[in-house]
Image (cartoon, rainbow, N blue to C red):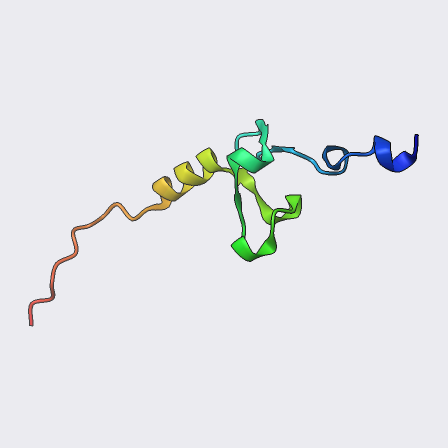
Length: 73
């Protein structure tokens, strides 16, 4: 039995990551967004903020005041 037979891809890659916002450990491939689509599927291509926290951050930063009116010339 050789050394190459014992090592699998799962041993080299981390599939869980701790979210920097909520602090929960979640699955990297299912619960995190890719930072750029052309970077591939390497673990370093995924963000450090989970999808749920990203959605909440975007919703909270969204502009709430929509009372803009057309200028009266």
